Image (cartoon, rainbow, N blue to C red):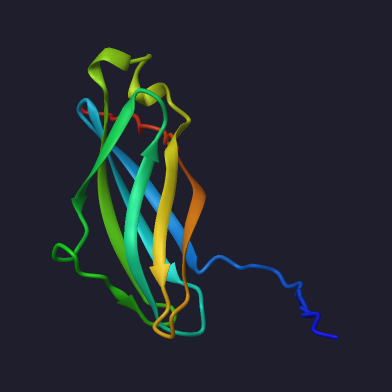
Length: 140
């Protein structure tokens, strides 16, 4: 009768993040250095196409070291990892308190691409400042 029929399929499965992420924060004067390590958590190869630290209000970040040349995308094999170091500092006109008083610096945004064509962006990993105790020094 000339009518066009369309079928829609939907699948339910847990979406697992393609990366395991670890970070550490070090204060260096009036700024923080944030090292982020990204490990491929998939069974296949994956390109890491972009990385950005989206800072909380009053802060800004820049990449200090990415271990790659401009425009180069690291290919991570299964369980392979890549590290990026960000510098975080306060924006002078928006400064609210001290860096050491912060709990969350911001969130990571990672772009990725699988060699067979699929790609995406992982957002939402919180970068937290984890205070550590300063040992007492006994100098005699």
